[in-house]
Length: 247
Image (cartoon, rainbow, N blue to C red; front, top):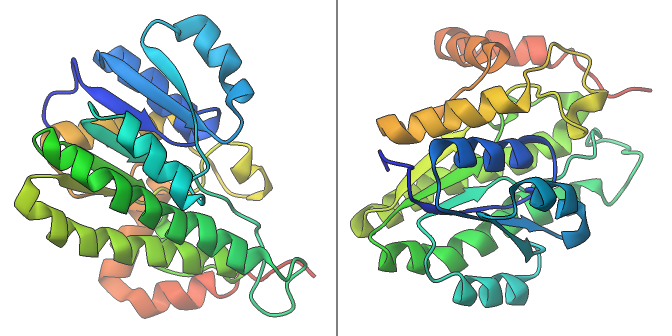
C-alpha cells in the first residue's frame, strides 16, 4: 500500500495511546474514512468531537469472535487494517501477582489478533488486497522476565504475522509487523526506560506502509535491540534476563 490518501482504515484500540495516534496520523495522511474501534465506544467521544467527519466509532472487543465477525460483515469497504489493541499486565511467569495474567494476555494479544485476521482477511482480499498492520513488540524477539507473559504473547503475535504474510500473499495483502520498544502511553507508564511518543510510532508505521516494508522498528530502543540481536542474540538474552519481576 503505497498511497494512503483516500483509503478506508480500521484501527483497533483507537481510544488512546498508539491507537489514537494512528487515527490522527491517518487523518493527516488523507485517509477518506477511519473506523475507530474500542470496547467502550464512549471513550472515543473526545476524538469524535474533534474529528467526527471522517472518523466513525465502532464497538469492538477483539476477543469476542462473534462480534468481530459481525463487524467484519459490516465494514465491507475496508482497505487497511491496523491491529493495535492489546493488553499488558507486567507480570512474571513464576508466582505472578495475577495468576490469570498470562491467559488474559494471550487471549487478547494472540487469539484476539487471530480473530481479526481470520474475519477481515477476506474483506481486504475483496477490495484488492490492501494492507494489514500488526502491533507486536521488540519483546516478540527477546523476552523480558519482568513482563514474561506479555513477552510470550507478543512472540506468538510475531509468529502469527510471519505465517499470515505467506498465506495472504496470493490475494495481494501486504502484512507489516511493528516492533516498538517502550512507548509513552498509559500502558507503558510502569516501564522505567526512555519512551517514544505514540505519534512517532504511528508515523514510522505509515511511512513503512508507503515504502512497502514488512517489519518496522519505530524507535531508538527497538532499533538498538534489533541490531544487537542480529549481532549476538544470546548476549541480548543474558542482558534482558537481568530485568526481573518486582519482588
